[in-house]
Length: 193
Image (tube, rainbow, N blue to C red; front, side, top):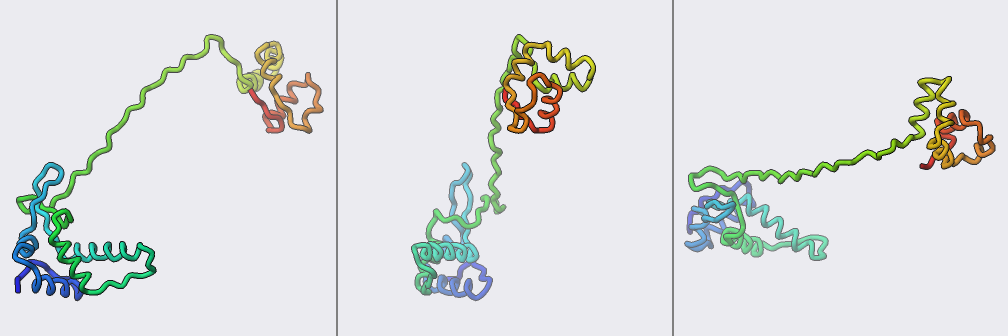
């Protein structure tokens, strides 16, 4: 029987440890006891596996079998023990990683590359365009003169031609602009520009 440097936490881990100590080869015992050097992130690291990692691995393997259409998985002990041999023998399966000086390896979190978005310059049109909201603000600031000024502006007349009154508002006289503006502000008229 070979002595393995594994700590068993609980009955399940103890059963796997007992099996491995009775059945591990010298080469496998060397891997379990001393770990295996691997290359990761351009570093030489020591890959050490433990029984807790194996239980997670065996749980994942059992789920894979259940995912093949089974409603449940029934795994015999020989299959679990075979998984244990495979888990500790296979170098590509990572356990806990340590630097060569014995510190636990923590991969550095890589910052996502920031992409700067180019600023788009927008040029203002050469001729100012009046909006319906500008005229309403003028009317509120100077109620006596704004209405007359607005109606003399041709661009406002063009904007008002695109006003689509709601069905009940279509009966309004066309020259009753203050009433139409109030209906627009109250949401009774729709304006499309």
